[in-house]
Image 1 (cartoon, rainbow, N blue to C red):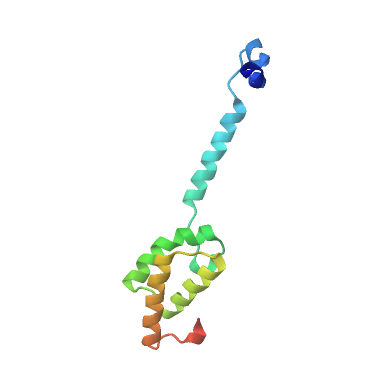
Image 2 (cartoon, helix red, strand yellow; image 1 turned 180 degrees about the vertical axis):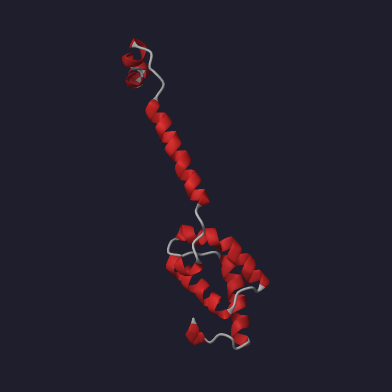
Length: 116
């Protein structure tokens, strides 16, 4: 019964003639290399231009570092919030650091609730 169950896997076609190397699989692997190479070489999008989750995910580590150092001005903090909303990106650690920086900006009066 097992033989019949997997009989479709045995192809007489394979036994009939040896096949030449697959050209189509070579083409596919070349195009995959090109795509992966080009996607890894893509420049990160500017914060104001972020639209997708993937774009935000690429920017998140550098943003987190800049937030920890306190390198972002009030306007940039607003841009971070807007980019997070547009991309629907969620990272608890990033949000915690961002919340602290926003709080500091409010306390310094360099940012008002209406600006966000």
